[in-house]
Length: 293
Image 1 (spheres, rainbow, N blue to C red):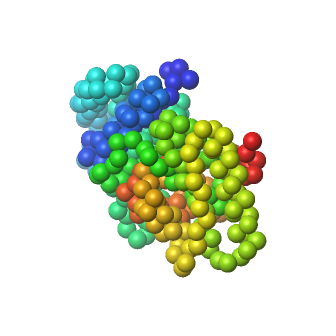
Image 2: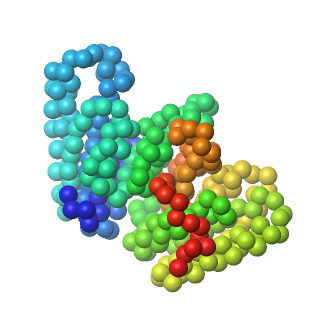
Image 3: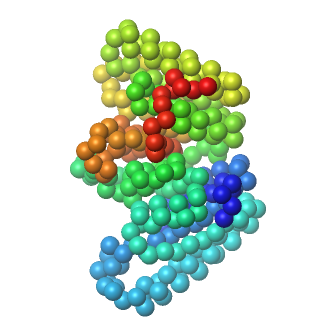
């Protein structure tokens, strides 16, 4: 696969939610003249593994059936969007295989459905395949929850704070806004009445606005008070009141305790909204928004 191709990986479980995610991926592929790879994974650590044990012949037969089903879907999607669509059936741990294949095809983006109904405990621990992918993927991941989505993107919600945000995330917002012809609504949440923090946040917002506006993107900025709400609740309330079609977040860890934790605010946003969420995991530290050109 040509490394310059805008390659989009879509994990397919043939559930309603994975088909909804595929619709979103198709729209992005059309905008980028990109290429979609459909991936279905036969889980080796779940019920099938317990049923089949080490019976490779049964796994092989199941994989062939799954590949045929994927091939049929790929032909349908390709005919619908007029672009190349690949299909791949694999065996392994779902999240690991998704990451492995995304690296193999040099994916620019992963788009995947999630039901987002974890137990109270797993709201804190990365227990779902979607969250393992979000945590470990080197490319951005769009998680798609909910059934009804605008066919396109009018408003990208871009939350920023003083310490964790990087120009990498702002650059992704610029790229997507140009593709969609979308507005970017940049928001920072003020947790207290610290005037110094307020001024820093305001300077931060204005710099990002200049950067995006100079890139030809319609941009609005707003500094809002948390008023006793959590950071995630403040962002979700803002997105709802501003007709957000995509929320962009960073998913770097809040500490070095374990790779199986990401920021609690990031988790809460993904779990508690039906708006698609684009998670950007910085691989290296590339500076704050103050380094924007």
